[in-house]
Length: 288
Image 1 (cartoon, helix red, strand yellow):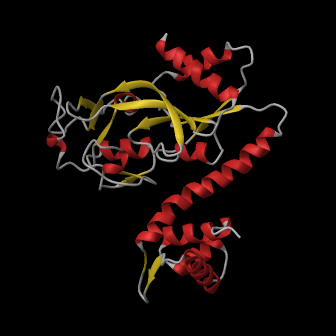
Image 2: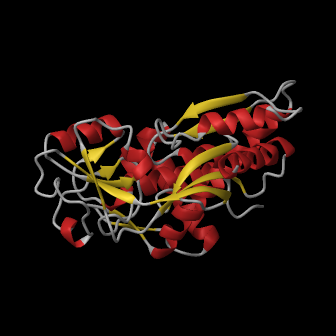
Image 3: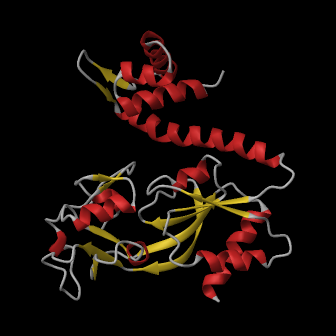
């Protein structure tokens, strides 16, 4: 018998996110005792404690953190297997490209035009993802390829080609103390409030990425724009992501911020010819 079963992973993933047996059970639509028994069975089978339980809180052990991380990708892989199997049976399989709204750096039309000139080109459907979930669209089979920003997006389990590399800018309200500068440094921004992107994992210094902030949570560019215009936060973004924002906002280059790359990503195990052709066309369109 397999040591890990999909249903058990789903149960544990819900508990790892909620850190509360009652809320996790309600989310899963099962009784709380059933969830507790399933987690204990999983711990007995693996021979390690996954959670620390008390009357007041639930916390993951180091082993639980490992299972949370790897279990998430395992569930995405199972979902991708089912989705790609269903699509393999379709008579006319289309390619699905997921992008962030305004996150193509003006390259998308050229990429699509280059691919359309191939004699066996498929129709390309454009999907719009959020700030942090586009890589998961590829991992779970909802999309075949994705436009992602490195180092902001997690490329675990994905291959990629770099389309362009660019600097970053501080996005400021027009009356900000730094708005008149020709450039700023990360040290200049050290005490500024940076937003937290909804769904982002990890943290870091200003300019490290969308997950770096400790300020208000934002779900999209519209919310970010509103906060910056109100003077409640600033943002550090790749130049191409800053351009679609509000015309009143000021963009000041951050001289010492690490450069970011716009990449086209696809699954590491995906060897389908249409995907390879689309990637090759995209690279040709930006290089030529």
